[in-house]
Image 1 (cartoon, one colour):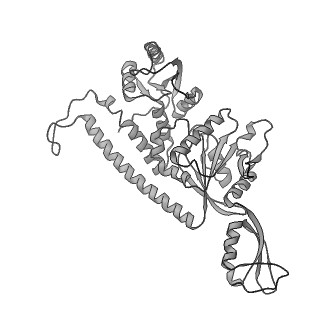
Image 2 (tube, rainbow, N blue to C red):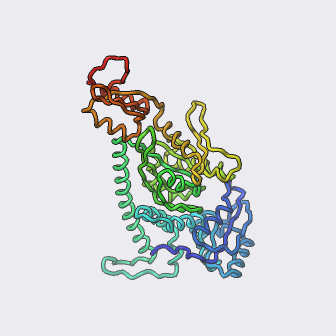
Image 3 (cartoon, rainbow, N blue to C red):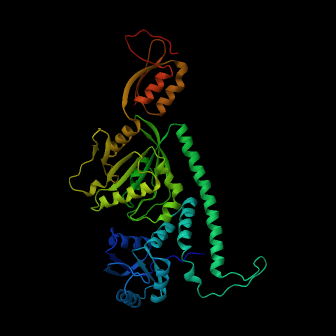
Length: 433
């Protein structure tokens, strides 16, 4: 009702202007990839530079004429700017160019709308679209007179824009209530996992870094993964088993991008909270992309915005199969802890190193010990098998279990605190308390 989204295959004019006053410029190559991801058909790419934008049309009169000429010659239905436009600039441009105009924020919102699959994802995208559209309602209704009053609407009546603003406000309220329930359900799930002492590992990274491919490799699943921006949007949780550690939850989240629209960060907060509450972040980086340092900065910016920049993080440099002479490896910080893993989700190179690094970071110091359990303590034996920490098992002359285990030092201490004894072959056998 409120949205007039691009149709697939629309003839599209792309506009990218370098503004001297802007410290960080948008990437024109990424811009074209975004347009293609949205289904646009680029007909002409117009570039230029200015010291500063104009308040009326964003560009100067000469560039405006160049854009208008391109629209006419290509019979373009859509012009997309690789910049944020004010509502008035968007309106003025549409009136002058006689076609629809979209800014970078609207473009990204449209891609999100196409890719959302779950009910939660669709709600979050609609919320962001409504917030963006609320400042742009005027352009569609400037031709309408005031509506007459009626039952329940006595007095001077309302304009169509006022009616739409009221309906939009009601829909925003409804969506926010639904998302509040989603956040509550997610919080309940996190509390349950915390009570069960199950760690959550959350994937973050720039869009198209290979998060979903890595997720698929770790979980042996087949989530949709494609070589395009924002191929997947909906958060996915899967339980995996880590050797010498036990069960953990993997969370695949939406990819980030430079200058991710604030509306999306806010509306996707329910999903992104999985990141803020994670035991460990896996920051997936496309090692083959020469611009990856700036992508890392963009991810850090979003993590800071959602309050996850202090969370434990392991950088995962993916796609080493596209690099010459790059071997899978673990890099460590000055304290000896893993801080980078180099691998290829596509070929599987380095996946064992990733699991090793993840377990080391989640578990802290790993120790080995042999414990003795009575037959009546078989439930603890079962739990240790579930966590995959038992290396070998034997039975003594009294029928007790002798378990050689490898696990985090803190977990071993908890077992000993519960009265379970370490097994020493030369020590006299005593009953566990």
